[in-house]
Length: 129
Length: 359
Image (tube, rainbow over all chains, first blue to last red):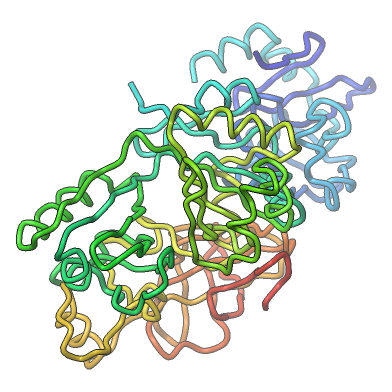
């Protein structure tokens, strides 16, 4: 059984979002996603200041198994990235919802978040896989 | 339902993530394949390789049979227990399988062949055997554990006890000995010292649990692949198959063209290929970010090739690969990775041995 925290929002492409207040959201990949990918070896992150649209591929998680695109779940500006992943990509495996976060995005329109999946909705998505 | 080795339940209780491997339910990893990789390079790990096929060859014409069947020459073997890396080829020189042959006497040999090619191998072994006075016996009642790493010797000595281990002490690589019900060979697929232990299926769980209790790390197919690739060892079906000759797969050293009067299946095709030229398997090293992977396109000297196996090397901290390219390649090449051309260096296809970089 995969851990899917109730307080987060999810994209069907396996990213999670945490509301940090002030229109800023932290984004990472789910425990289920890191489990599918296996040991992470490189994480390529977006540029701070980049303006992205929902669904843009903004980062790459490269594991022993495959290179996988990470998509922006909502439109906005990248305001922070997790530099720690440069030297410790395995953090994504060990703590996907915590220290393994990837970037923070300032939403253009916070109502976009409402359209994302809740924990139950994401659970349904991974059961279909 | 997929085949299961006798260690299936032991894998589940060790937390294995199981995957289908050519019809077998096998462990991919027990948590982290990179940690398992490092365990083998720095300490000791074990793999369930019970899916591999053990075949005994016996009879008055066993030597004649194997000298005709195999590209390497078993007549080079004279010490009982000695092992040899070899391959069996089709008449076009393509590799039906690579294998290890163990010599016991001129009428008694053992082969260990791949599981993925089992049906084709058995059909070919039997077909060629029909021309010789020889018996070919598959041994499905045998299981196998590969114990690999710098601490493998100490761990095996501990589990076997001093008296049993005496027969193995100081054994050189590519030798084997029967110790009670265990057939123990100093062979492997990791580039480390270690053993491959063939054991009756009903005793393999006991041996596995003893090694586990001694602190040996169980390792899955994921680590097995990165270890063999770092060691520059081919994977059948990926680095070579029936359409590829050993000369195109960096296996020329395992083809015995001498003595010139030994006829073996595929010989004429290989000689023709030597005369006309052929592609070669090289190593690639990419020290920048990213991972070289199977199927990526390689540009070299105006020619084009393909990566047959690629991975992130946990020991080196960057990516390495094997690629089949036109002969006479430069020291540099370019690989197309996710739409971008990336510069890589071309080296011999061997990257790590005994825990250390050989680049």
